[in-house]
Image 1 (cartoon, rainbow, N blue to C red):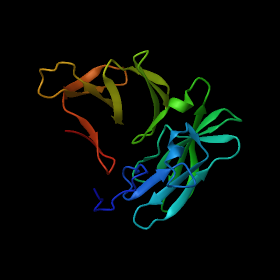
Image 2 (cartoon, rainbow, N blue to C red):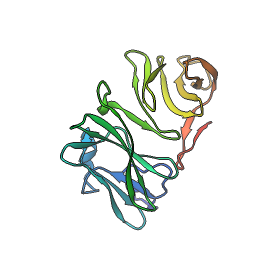
Image 3 (cartoon, one colour):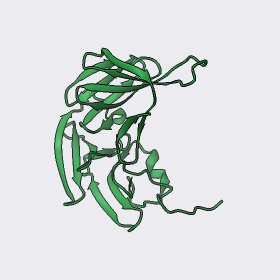
Length: 208
């Protein structure tokens, strides 16, 4: 078996919405071991065609970068999470590729927030954790509240005032077992149907 095309780097995950850009948390981009650590000290970007390497952020001695909340691109900025252990704050950071500017967009208290289990979503920016044990989606930013998360449900994205979830149907007799749910901020289901929520290379979500 041999690879014909050279569309991606086989060791690195790509940044959805940023064509040809891949990310890693280690100085050596070819070291796959770095991805198994829960925290990192450096976030880098790698361009598959030009082989350019950009250091997005290097954490200070008191900081760590989340290796669970993978970097997310909203069409303009790349977002990532940093924990400042001195002030016990979770920092929402952004990086603009065009200007190479790094800035702190917001911060929220790490008190009671599981930094090592938080996931980052964009459009809009949202920090959340799926708590299957308590059957809820715990949202920590931009405001703290919970939504019901029943068995076989997974949170996918937010669009406006609505939250989209995928669901696996247990009935084996169904021709399609992928379903979706749309909930409002009160956790009420306002729409449901058969279909799979997919995210494409450009970062867009679609029901197919």
